Length: 249
Image 1: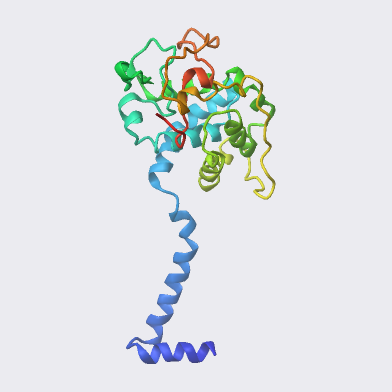
Image 2: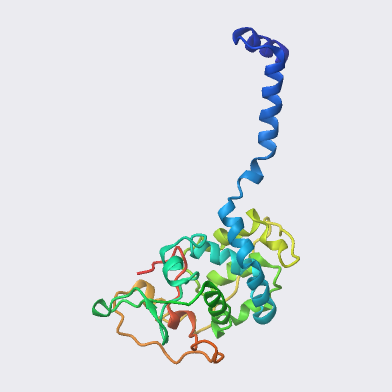
């Protein structure tokens, strides 16, 4: 059956057998190389540029390098978002309790702007310190190689409202093999990621006031203690951090 089908194709088209075989071989190798082609160079360049600082912060703060890079890629649109370009803010951290420059926002409309950094590396440092807040303390019970539980835990702790946020991070980590950066391996996707139970603080009625409500009259409570190198970084609710797919109004 297959042989007769090939003969009909060869008879129909004015090509010889050698050209036909070459086309089959070429198509075969194109199919094999498809996964490699799915890795966009812009992503690879971003990873190469920031993987050292991500590994450094993993060592100093305990935040998995794979998670840091995946969030940076997602939140900053691979470093191409307007905020990343103009404010060096790769993680969408808002300007609550911030004494530095502010990007965007409007006082007359009570819109909170975003923190503006001198360079992208400052944004990465602030992100690492931000995740050391009390809200995220439970995440450090997971190994730094357990990127699936970290991704799910970030959503459970309130980092983003998007229910698909963990999958977005996991897809980036697995597509670009970010799990290997810190010596980890690809995890079995058949097993659900460990979920975390939010604390009473996370369940408070004001948890999402800066995302779901237009009334900005509420004042954030006292910030978390931080080092003297950067301004104190409050909890996610206080800081107004919004994930890339959250209601960032």
